[in-house]
Length: 282
Picture 1: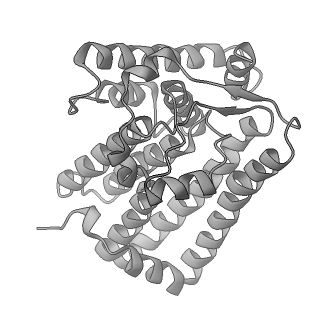
Picture 2: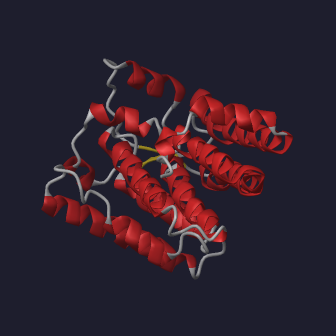
């Protein structure tokens, strides 16, 4: 029986990537993209305020989701989450897995550049608690100025991870063989999405915007139907928020997501609906 993806060694996976010239170069490209489009641009904006407008994007329903510091470990797993997936592909398919792994790593780098088309015109933030009693929260506050909320790259990354994994496994004809792993990765994406809301790193507005962005980025993997299914499963296995609040949250995310898609039909660019939303809240 094949082991869960979560049991893949992160260190061994990084060594495998470094040992393969194609994957190593893809990893370097991805790292440069993440560094420039997330860290450099964000710190530049923090050091030189007023260059780019910053819009608060909280929603009243965010208050129904309790601040739960214990979720921070799950939230911070969003990068190891997709790297372990590379380990699974390389261990399972060996040389045949290099091509799909290469494409996936490159797509991660493109995600950051894609989202930056919004960030370079309008930054966004939420009311994040300054909780410094846990070392991991100290890391979050030190590393993330919290100016790139719409669209949420965290949500974009986990959506790309589970949808790309589905497509790769399907291409090998192994959907039935790896059904448990497919379900594991999708549930992992949902759990990390819930976690970033529990630790108040994002608003439900950010989730809807990220989903819209992913449909624009690659509709073949994240269609509106897939988006509907993704939202329908949020907060299904948690005690809080309360059931009636969970329903209201799911309904709002879906309404905002479909609203963005409707506006995109008459827009001149994919980012226009998000920029219009941000400017309406300025």
